[in-house]
Length: 350
Image (cartoon, rainbow, N blue to C red):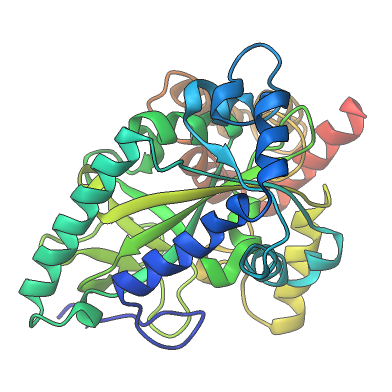
């Protein structure tokens, strides 16, 4: 018999009303209005909607072009708390993590407004399904970590099978906001040494416990999680992700290059795993996967290397996500060999 449970908001220990979430978004969005001069500077420098020309500074042009997103500036208490909460959940890496920029959708973005209406419609449907009380739908703040370009594609086109693992039964995987470090491990460092996470609202509804490696949410459930007591991963079926997930902000931040070492230390200190049963993912080093693959031959058998190359080209052909590639490599060659190859490639590149 499947285990089911309605998961509560992890950060506060209570459920979240959609109106309260909207108020929070409005208050953070109001940070940009709190400093009109800063908004003017945004436009003049090209970091705001009207500054989408060639003057827009990298690496944020991919978020601000065509007025897609607006950089939030100012020193409001809400913005400070927003950043502080993210950093505090970076665990042992908090002291070396700096939030460089926060971007949000402007009110004029018609695409976001349409997606938000779809999100509200699904919320109403979920509320009706579970007794007509909005708290029973359980809206949770979660993070999606990836490369800068992947996040930019999600902002424009929404989530798709490309962001999911496991083929036809694939799910988009997100991390509860209370575990920023887990999301950071999924990020890819860009040329400016920045990582980027997408801050989203997720309608949980009826939640299924998903065994490690299964990544399958049954038809009688709305979402999945890896633990009922301390969820570190949320699973949303890819085909329904754009009605159950509403993206709100992009956080761009700098973190130490040795995040995996921080995660490993936290794992040893707690006697458990970072990211629950998934364990830490050794993909946060500022290297590319091709370089890791090149060094992997020194640590695995010829047969393992042949399979690793096949998996890599499957990933390059957009038939497998980065998350799934690394997960399968970890299962096949072992975490020790993969980490050794990652560190070896990093030392060669440096």
